[in-house]
Every structure is written in structure tokens, then in C-alpha cells.
Amino acid sequence: MLIAGLIALLSLLFGSNDLPFLLPKAEKAMNKVIVDKDKRKQLDDIFKRVEKYEKKFRKEKKSYIKQLEKLNSDQKATAEHFNAVGETMLRVNTETLDFMVSIRLSIGGVITQAQWIAIIDESRKSYEKSKQQYVKVYPKFEKAVNKLTNRIEDIMDDQAKAKLITDRIQAFHKMTISNSKKLVAFNVFNNPVLGNIKSTEKELRALNPDMLRLRSEIFDEYVAIHNLIAANCTHKEWTRVVKKFNKLF
Image (cartoon, rainbow, N blue to C red; front, side):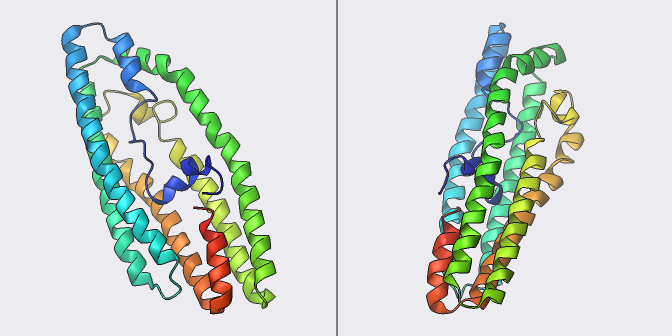
């Protein structure tokens, strides 16, 4: 990847490595706030479940990312090929969101609202620090996209076709930034449902469709750009253009 910090942004395509609904360094914060040994044991057991699930999640994610990278390098790859990978990604992300709803409910059964608020306060400094990663990434992403579109214009002979591609990539850039900001807001500090440890299963699950939609929009546009490049480049141009495009990811 061109810029290490873009991982946080472009993971929108695949689902972040960080499972949702958990606080930054939540386990550490919970252990500091919760002094009751029995409750801490229950929380430790919950986090062991999360750790076990993370291994499965990352293994599945690694598999479909490899498939997607292979498809994106193939000029003849069809929408059906991408859809097969997209369906796998959707399934994995859906199952993960459902799992994390169950984790939130389990945590809510162990701690009080007052303890949860104390945990959030304990984690706020860590959250503010991690939030700065996105603030720094956005302008870097814009710079990388501008560099990419300039290179595409240099590579392609037909400037009308080149403009079709670069305009679509610029639109993709704006969508990615917009959807990223919306997804980042799904956290206990900014979302009232996530901020309330006593939120019901129905309330928590109601957030899932929007989170999945924001990722799906990015994925669908990513595929559309691949198809646009494939249809408007000669084979020689394709090899050079797709190589530059893939450097964003």
C-alpha cells in the first residue's frame, strides 16, 4: 500500500481489522474500572471469545482480499466474478456485526451503566489519539489519488477515455472519504446507542444495515472503476494503469 495510514481508510472495502463496538483498549480500561474479581473473570471470558473470533475473522478476510487482488489484476474479470467475492465479504462482515452485538449484550449483563461511563472516560484519551490517524490520512489519500489520476493521463493516448476514468476515481475518492467519516462515527463516543451499555439487541442490530451499506457502496464503486478501466484501456495501457491503481490498496 502506498501510505501505511490508508489501511484505516481503505479497510472500508474489506471490513476493519478492529471488531466494532469495542472501545480502544477496552480490556485495559475495564480491568482498571472493575475491581470485583468475579466480574473481571466474566469479562476476561468474554474477551477470550473475542480473541478467538478475531483469528477466524482475519483468516477469512485475508482469503477474500487475495481473491479480490487477483481479480482486480485481470482485465477480463467480470462483474459476476467480483460479486462472488462481494457476497463472501458481506457474509463475513454481517456475521461479525452480529457477533459483536452478542458481545455488547454480554458485557451489558456484567457491568453497570456507571461503570460503563467510567470505562468510556478512561478510554477517551486513547480514542482521541486514534481519531487523529484519520485526520492525517484524508489529505494523504487526496494527494495519492491526484498523483494516480495524473499518471493515468500520462499513460493513456485517448484523453477522453482517460478523463472518464480519472473523473470516476475522483468521485470514488470523495465517496470513500464521506463514507469513512460516517463509519468512524459508529463508536461509543459519538453514537448514543453504542454509548449506552443498556441498549437493547434490537437497537444495536438496527445500526448494522447502515454500516454494511456504507462498505458495500465503496466495494461496488471499486468494481465499477475496474470495469471502466478494463473497457477503456488497450492491453498495454491496462497493465500500467491497473498497476498504478492497485498501489492505492
